[in-house]
Structure formats: C-alpha cells, structure tokens
Figure (cartoon, rainbow, N blue to C red):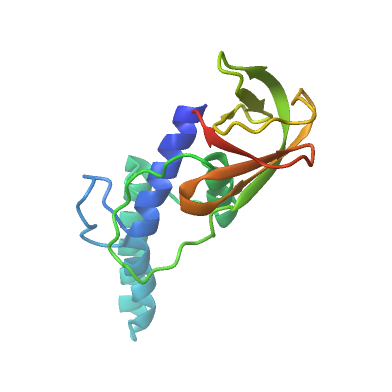
Length: 177
C-alpha cells in the first residue's frame, strides 16, 4: 500500500510540475490540456471543432498510455496526508512561479493502533493508517501511549516533528516508513 501511495505521489508531483512521462528530468514537449484549451481561441467554427477533435484524441491517447494522469484536489490532498512526515521525492520544476494545487498538511490528528518501546526506551507508535513514528528525544510521558489514544503530530522547526499523545507534553518524533 505504501509503495502505491509513494508512486501516486511521484506521479502527481510530475503532473503538477509539467514533467514528461517519458523521462524524469525532461520538460514536457507539450501540455495536452493547455493544447486542448488553446483550441477555444480559434475563431472559425469548423477549424475550432477540428482543433478540439484532434487535441481531444491526443489527450485520450496519452491518458490511455499513462503519460498523463488526472487527479482531483481531494486525491492530491489524500496523497499528501499519507506522505506526511516522509522526505518528499525530488520534483522537477518547469514553472517556478506555479503554486501547488493544495498546501501540504502542517499536522495530522489520528489514533494510535499500537505502541511499543525500543531497547533504549523510546516509543514506537503505529498509527491508524499504518504509519510508524518513533520518539527521538528523551522526554518521559506521564501516561504511556496505547491503542486507541489520540495522537496529534505537527511540523516543527528545521524539518522535525512534535507529537502530543492524548494531550500530553509534546515529544519529538520521526517517521520510520
């Protein structure tokens, strides 16, 4: 499941940045959606219809080959939430000024599926979605994490993450998978 989410995230990143499916790092020779929309500016009706038909057929072929994927903002947000805490894959920026379709989440609120301690006494928590997070600081919790407890994880300074287990003082954590 995580490999599929990672692959979907990479595909979405490629689409968002205009990269070609033919090769990582190569800018797309054309944008089939913009090409299709460009047909609206053709003044003559017959020529506009011919342009729309040709561009729609090209887009359909690229969709069938898998060169182009269409995703909703909700799908992008779902993938970004699943990727929370992971290092993002390298992306190709063909348009530096382009804004992302949705802002990546700054925090997640979930429940703990299970919790255990490492040999050095740090907590490892498996979340409801299967993500694994490990405590990396030496703080002690007044109440041990256990299945069903609420967990809030948020981005902190310099790429780190803080987790509040059942509203307790935050501990510093990192994602393991």
